[in-house]
Amino acid sequence: MTRLLIVDDDKELSAMLVEYLSSEGFDIDTAYHGLSAIEKVKGQQYDALILDVMMPELDGFGVLRHIRSYSDVPVLMLTAKGDDVDRIVGLEMGADDYLSKPFNPRELLARVRAVLRRSIAPSAPEVLDESLLVAGLEMDMRTRLANANGALMDVTSTEFNLLYLLLRQVGHVVTKEMLSQSAMGRSLEKYDRSIDMHMSNLRKKLSEYGLALSIVTVRGQGYQLVEG
Image 1 (cartoon, rainbow, N blue to C red):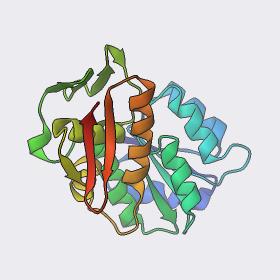
Image 2 (image 1 turned 180 degrees about the vertical axis):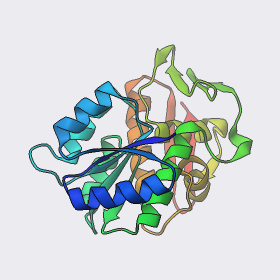
Image 3 (image 1 turned 180 degrees about the horizontal axis):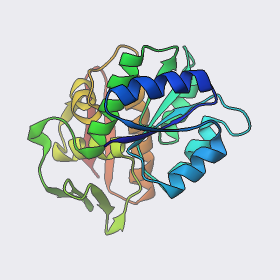
């Protein structure tokens, strides 16, 4: 059974989500403050986290920073409605997706399922090549590991999927629509900057690992991975 950890100091909301998501077949655990969440993720195995930004003492960003130091578990962040800064910061720190409060539980369910799908493999069957190697970057779909000149790259599940799609079509433009659908498991939404922020993270990592690869933004179309 798929295990989720809900991290939110709003106990009433957490109880409602536990009831709703349990009815959809998930095994739910809860944490009402950041330190408890960090300890739970260290000691137990979860398939995904639902993490609220606004919490006392240690907020969601602090929790995410700690968790990303030892776990690549998929994280869906809950942000304040219309707060673009929270969304951007969360994605820059390694969150896989976000959802604004208040939200419809059915949308939360859809987002959670999309995050879980992309943590396993891109949804489109045509991208399931076993292994790719270009300019020192090797990506293996079976193990879901990325290696840069022999060194294991630290990438989230979403970053892996996006980079894999670009690597598979190196030198060609991949549309944002395809990236969203195949790598993130959902249709591209208007004004959604999730992919842009993930690409920004990937650019930094390609540079940090000394790879002769760069991600180019093709205005009005999408992204292109180029050598050199």
